[in-house]
Image 1: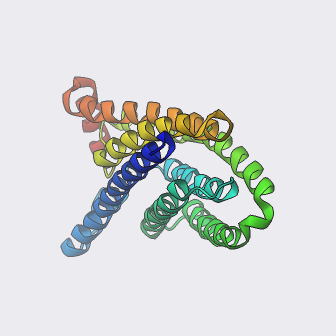
Image 2: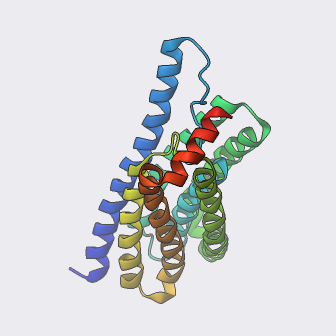
Amino acid sequence: MSFYNIFGGINTFCIFLSLLGVYAQLRTVLERKKQREKLQQTLKESVTTQLSLNQFSVSFLAYFSFFVYGYSIAPFNHYIVWPRLIAALLVAMILYQIWHDRKNKASLAVILISFLFLILGSIGLAFGERYIDQGRLISTFLILLISLLIAQGYYHQISLIVRSGVTGAVNLKMSQFIFVMDLSTIAFALSMGLDNGWPLMVLAVTSGITKVIMMYLFYWVKHSPLAKQRALIWQEG
């Protein structure tokens, strides 16, 4: 068995682990929603408090761009396409919950654009063989752009936690599982060769760095006197 198939299988397994993290985040939101409905009152914290619309919209685009990239290269890369499609759908469900909770124009625009992208991506999957070069060029550009947006999006998420001293509805498991996926993606990208694998490596390294910071913030919130002080101010405000 080639290194490509070995690391492709490992990466697929790790992606499915990351899906457990995304699902854990979705379940956290749904449980908070159920709790609020059970109490039949408006709580001070919203269901999706501290969840960054910016960060989750970028996460959706990251999964989506790899979904498109996977069917735009030759040969068709099943290791990339199907796990990323499932991940994009799960993140889209989180974006829907954010819109349902906040009901503002920004969250509505994001969920509508996400659904549009999923429709267009599905059409591209059906007819992708006719436009392989164009699809690869577009998806590569998207991956590089999204690498920058991931850094920016997670900076926004990180800033929310640092300023408030609380993690709110943010789920630690999501960062942990995605970090493992990022490590396996780097190994898989190397096995593909730099010609096809370098876009995956750029995004995975960027994503991995942000996840390390996110995991540290959960420790910081629990043990830092400054975080506890900011949490008191945030709760009183």
